[in-house]
Image (cartoon, rainbow, N blue to C red):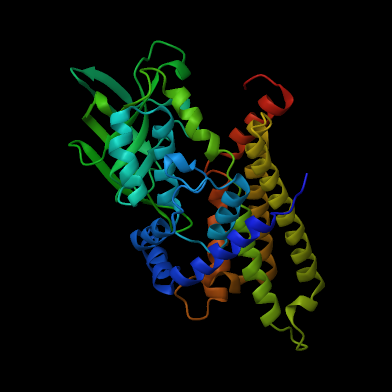
Length: 388
């Protein structure tokens, strides 16, 4: 196995970096920081113009046919630069689900808009009372003529306040085992009875709690079979649970390294001469390299269609996020209170990146499947253990 990206992938990474240098302006970053919204329409349109909205999709389906290693290179660089790609990611994830299991009418309605970057789709999986157990969804969908009445609530529906739709999981049969009574819907958020309330996270992100009070949705917006929602969700979760956060680790390391090289001790030497700083930098570089190797192994398995991807992807996500938390905490301990100077403070360190990463890292073991979920998947698929 060759763990290098390869010439083609390295050239593409360079192209992505040059693109971000051009379009990821201070104004875009300022707007995202100020609003807490990880989506920017102008940036999304720039990505569209490059043809990068669906990098890994087959060419015949509107994508670029990029291999998983190239897709990983794009993901690592956009993470490293804190580019506002979350809205693109959720929208294209749902578009991919529709492309695979949706009706022809759903494809005709959603896919062209997704490829024009003029639609935003939020995710409605988590519920206030059920945490990360998506299969325990209590939001109900009850038949009403040619459609359904949906009642319930969803937590962490990020971008719902600017989205056109929410891709949600609802319980359509409460009398069968929980995984068997679920159905997925693409619910238009302009329907009467939808309420979106802001929730601000420790990282400064604007997410939402959404309420659905007897909301009517036509059956045409049902994705997949009635009570077949968990099978549809497995298509969506396949990409989410294999996400690596190595790009986030690189962003923290970049900021930490810049601080260490430009900050001096009392004797005038750079902080890099401090043994504790050097030890932490060495450990962080090593852990970042392991995260990258795990991510590339997952991409290789995906490219070859190997079954091992079911556990290798979660290994990458689990390791990279838990190491990121450790690295952020250790960086804070080394730098001290100065590291807590936030974005907007003229004395902030490295543009506020270090302070933001200290807060942001806390949530990464929850995003895209909690560490507990990742460990369960690894136990089941790598070790053959029963479902917990």
